[in-house]
Image 1 (tube, rainbow, N blue to C red):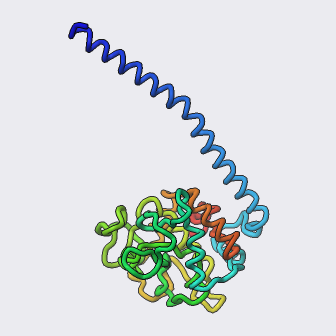
Image 2 (tube, rainbow, N blue to C red):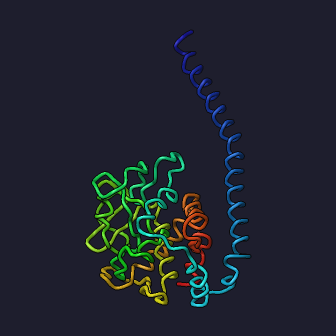
Image 3 (cartoon, helix red, strand yellow):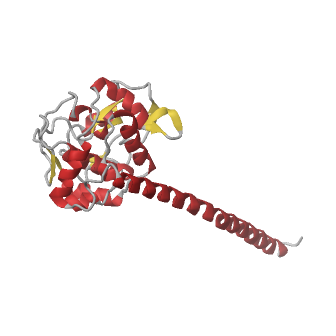
Length: 277
């Protein structure tokens, strides 16, 4: 074959390869779309069933009336001890790809369920609503509510500390995509909505009528020991930008079925965030 013929042959081979890839992609696309549609349909069906039963008293309400109705619904829960939280998190945050592991909230790292404790490189129990904000500690109640407790690397948990949530700061060592400064913490994009919905769940569940403080979101950072967490405007933005995914929805269901028997309503209805706040 002459040198002049070789480029033409290469062009023809490349065109054939591209056509084959395109054909494969087109063939695969309907299957992927079908799976996504089926998942969305199943989620919609499940939510409709909850609206007819669990959330029946809240449907059609907004503002303080909705918040009050949801509080009445979700305060009916089975309480667990702080020691039992270890067992719960191993079920609620199980790695979908490895049943022997859990997924850490901020790092996103998959780590052995048995590698839990207080030492460097282990995972521990992160209070997303910092327990010092309201001074409820680890006693049974808000301190053991699994809806806002998540597995997290010991060192990264320490870096977050009791900071409020806001955008900005410097990169967090060992946790790509997370940022922090002296008074706030920004989680990675994939869990921003998770964090927002956990904080707002706490604000609805704990209204000061069961010996625990009345927890509320506000527009501040540096909330210290007051029963408040900020910033609300940022949390609302995160709820919009990062809607509930399959992991978060499964987690909500496991808590409901196996442990507390109550739900985070903002996972089932993320639009209720705007309806209340």
